[in-house]
Length: 138
Image 1 (cartoon, rainbow, N blue to C red):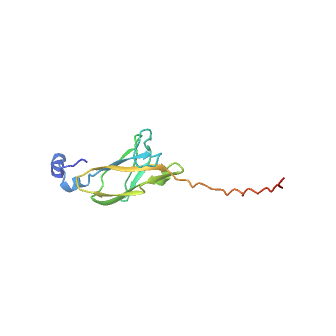
Image 2: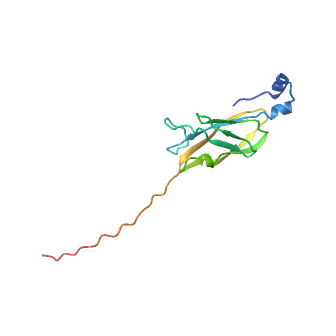
Image 3: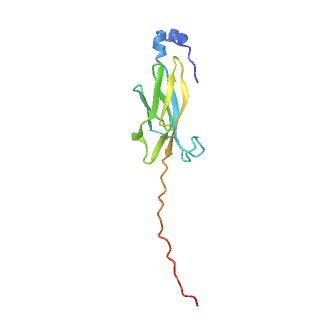
Protein backbone atom coordinates (compact mmCIF):
# COMPACT_ATOMS: atom_id res chain seq x y z
CA UNK A 1 0.00 0.00 0.00
CA UNK A 2 1.32 3.42 -0.95
CA UNK A 3 0.98 6.13 1.71
CA UNK A 4 1.11 9.74 0.53
CA UNK A 5 2.07 12.70 2.74
CA UNK A 6 -0.70 15.13 1.84
CA UNK A 7 1.09 18.23 3.14
CA UNK A 8 4.29 17.56 1.13
CA UNK A 9 2.38 16.85 -2.07
CA UNK A 10 0.30 20.03 -1.63
CA UNK A 11 3.44 22.14 -1.22
CA UNK A 12 5.17 20.49 -4.19
CA UNK A 13 2.18 21.01 -6.49
CA UNK A 14 1.32 24.42 -5.05
CA UNK A 15 -2.26 23.38 -4.32
CA UNK A 16 -4.30 23.09 -1.13
CA UNK A 17 -4.19 19.92 1.01
CA UNK A 18 -7.94 19.57 0.40
CA UNK A 19 -7.29 19.24 -3.35
CA UNK A 20 -4.65 16.58 -2.68
CA UNK A 21 -7.08 14.60 -0.54
CA UNK A 22 -9.19 14.05 -3.64
CA UNK A 23 -6.31 12.30 -5.38
CA UNK A 24 -6.93 8.83 -4.04
CA UNK A 25 -6.64 5.69 -6.16
CA UNK A 26 -8.06 2.21 -5.70
CA UNK A 27 -6.54 -0.60 -7.73
CA UNK A 28 -6.73 -4.30 -8.24
CA UNK A 29 -7.07 -7.13 -10.72
CA UNK A 30 -9.59 -9.33 -12.49
CA UNK A 31 -8.82 -12.87 -13.71
CA UNK A 32 -10.49 -16.04 -14.99
CA UNK A 33 -10.58 -18.44 -12.05
CA UNK A 34 -11.24 -21.64 -13.96
CA UNK A 35 -10.97 -23.98 -10.97
CA UNK A 36 -13.13 -21.68 -8.79
CA UNK A 37 -10.66 -21.66 -5.86
CA UNK A 38 -10.42 -17.87 -5.46
CA UNK A 39 -6.68 -17.84 -6.16
CA UNK A 40 -4.88 -16.81 -9.32
CA UNK A 41 -3.16 -20.03 -10.37
CA UNK A 42 -0.63 -20.71 -13.10
CA UNK A 43 -2.44 -20.92 -16.42
CA UNK A 44 -5.42 -18.77 -15.40
CA UNK A 45 -5.71 -15.80 -17.73
CA UNK A 46 -6.15 -12.15 -16.76
CA UNK A 47 -9.53 -10.55 -17.34
CA UNK A 48 -8.66 -7.82 -19.82
CA UNK A 49 -11.16 -5.27 -21.11
CA UNK A 50 -13.55 -5.78 -18.16
CA UNK A 51 -15.30 -2.71 -16.72
CA UNK A 52 -15.01 -2.15 -12.95
CA UNK A 53 -17.51 0.36 -11.53
CA UNK A 54 -17.55 2.35 -8.31
CA UNK A 55 -20.68 3.35 -6.40
CA UNK A 56 -19.42 6.93 -6.52
CA UNK A 57 -19.96 7.05 -10.29
CA UNK A 58 -16.45 6.46 -11.66
CA UNK A 59 -15.32 3.40 -13.56
CA UNK A 60 -12.23 1.84 -15.11
CA UNK A 61 -11.54 -0.80 -17.75
CA UNK A 62 -8.97 -3.49 -16.99
CA UNK A 63 -5.79 -3.60 -19.03
CA UNK A 64 -4.58 -6.70 -20.90
CA UNK A 65 -2.94 -7.94 -17.69
CA UNK A 66 -6.27 -7.68 -15.81
CA UNK A 67 -5.24 -4.72 -13.64
CA UNK A 68 -7.32 -1.61 -13.00
CA UNK A 69 -6.99 1.72 -11.18
CA UNK A 70 -9.93 3.90 -10.16
CA UNK A 71 -8.57 7.37 -9.56
CA UNK A 72 -9.63 10.65 -8.01
CA UNK A 73 -11.99 9.20 -5.41
CA UNK A 74 -13.23 11.21 -2.46
CA UNK A 75 -12.50 9.78 0.99
CA UNK A 76 -15.32 7.67 2.41
CA UNK A 77 -17.00 4.29 1.89
CA UNK A 78 -17.49 3.03 -1.67
CA UNK A 79 -18.51 -0.23 -3.30
CA UNK A 80 -16.71 -1.68 -6.31
CA UNK A 81 -18.18 -4.25 -8.68
CA UNK A 82 -17.67 -5.69 -12.15
CA UNK A 83 -20.05 -4.66 -14.93
CA UNK A 84 -21.90 -7.88 -15.75
CA UNK A 85 -22.62 -6.69 -19.29
CA UNK A 86 -18.95 -7.21 -20.16
CA UNK A 87 -18.73 -10.80 -18.99
CA UNK A 88 -18.59 -13.81 -21.26
CA UNK A 89 -21.66 -16.05 -21.07
CA UNK A 90 -21.77 -18.61 -18.25
CA UNK A 91 -19.36 -16.70 -15.98
CA UNK A 92 -20.06 -15.05 -12.64
CA UNK A 93 -18.06 -12.59 -10.52
CA UNK A 94 -16.73 -13.50 -7.08
CA UNK A 95 -17.17 -11.48 -4.95
CA UNK A 96 -20.14 -9.67 -6.45
CA UNK A 97 -19.02 -6.40 -4.86
CA UNK A 98 -16.28 -5.17 -2.55
CA UNK A 99 -16.65 -2.48 0.09
CA UNK A 100 -13.63 -0.19 0.31
CA UNK A 101 -12.87 2.55 2.77
CA UNK A 102 -11.11 5.34 0.91
CA UNK A 103 -8.75 7.25 3.21
CA UNK A 104 -7.31 10.68 2.48
CA UNK A 105 -3.95 10.47 0.78
CA UNK A 106 -3.84 6.66 0.70
CA UNK A 107 -3.92 4.26 -2.18
CA UNK A 108 -5.43 0.82 -1.77
CA UNK A 109 -4.32 -2.03 -4.01
CA UNK A 110 -5.11 -5.69 -3.95
CA UNK A 111 -8.82 -5.52 -4.73
CA UNK A 112 -9.49 -8.78 -6.55
CA UNK A 113 -12.38 -10.07 -8.62
CA UNK A 114 -12.36 -13.57 -10.05
CA UNK A 115 -14.44 -14.55 -13.05
CA UNK A 116 -15.60 -18.09 -12.41
CA UNK A 117 -17.50 -20.50 -14.63
CA UNK A 118 -21.03 -20.84 -13.30
CA UNK A 119 -21.84 -24.13 -11.70
CA UNK A 120 -24.22 -26.00 -13.90
CA UNK A 121 -26.66 -28.36 -12.27
CA UNK A 122 -26.31 -31.96 -13.25
CA UNK A 123 -29.48 -33.22 -14.77
CA UNK A 124 -30.35 -36.64 -13.52
CA UNK A 125 -32.68 -38.66 -15.61
CA UNK A 126 -34.52 -41.52 -14.06
CA UNK A 127 -34.02 -44.69 -15.99
CA UNK A 128 -36.97 -47.01 -16.33
CA UNK A 129 -36.69 -49.95 -13.96
CA UNK A 130 -35.58 -53.15 -15.57
CA UNK A 131 -38.43 -55.51 -16.02
CA UNK A 132 -38.12 -58.85 -14.39
CA UNK A 133 -38.11 -61.66 -16.83
CA UNK A 134 -39.67 -64.83 -15.44
CA UNK A 135 -38.54 -68.04 -16.94
CA UNK A 136 -40.04 -71.32 -16.15
CA UNK A 137 -37.85 -73.62 -14.09
CA UNK A 138 -36.66 -76.61 -15.93
